[in-house]
Length: 292
Image 1: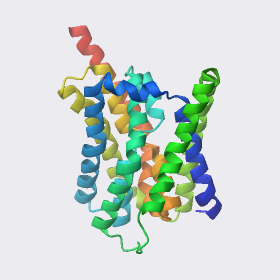
Image 2 (image 1 turned 60 degrees about the horizontal axis):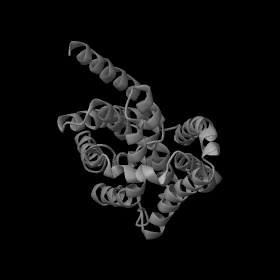
Image 3 (image 1 turned 135 degrees about the horizontal axis):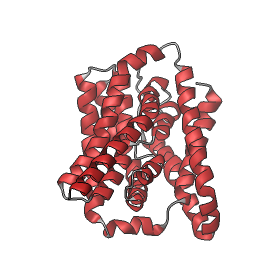
Image 4 (image 1 turned 180 degrees about the vertical axis):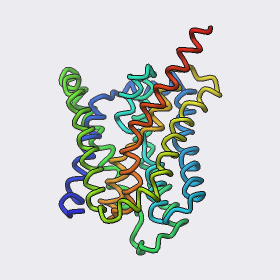
């Protein structure tokens, strides 16, 4: 990808998205964890433990190219995307829980994302990777900068002017979707000579991982007695990943476009799959309610 896009464009795009996330958050969203500890804890366990394990199982089962395998693990370690809130709202999930999960997950990911990514790099040992490929301390600080600082600024703006934050909510959501589309297009164009092979290699794995993420996010909470609206929220939070973050880390910090391909493919697939999954579980919930 073009160096200006790599060094400036992607981090700036991610910063805008994370700033928009901050505009929707308050300190109370973090405090809400204490009010719904069970739902939050189960969702976080799914996000932080079950998803990386599921991704690891899939890439091992399908014997993916090592760089693509690392890219899938990077995606699995990324927190939920901002559009998870919108999908949760559309399918009558507990949006407040989504906001809380996104807030907490974004903070935790600063630690867990480098750990999982470096584990994957060490395990799969991509041949194209040199000794510098990895998220060392300075790069972890960059992850912190592009994730948490814009969120904190957005929260500060909301604290100073909640009316402005409310007015900017819709434009920022639309802008975030546009930015995500541009990031995905940029990644695909930069790898256009290999994209057909990548789709063959990663398309099925990305689709399966998306459906598995959505299913884990819904089924596991329901097994542990979490009510349906919160399970829907958990499903959307866990199934809709922050693809822009994964792509930015792959391209800007790890300087490897191939690592970004799984996140780009996932970014295309996750919206229709999440919509279909949401419609299915909502229809099922309504049917069960009518029977009761």
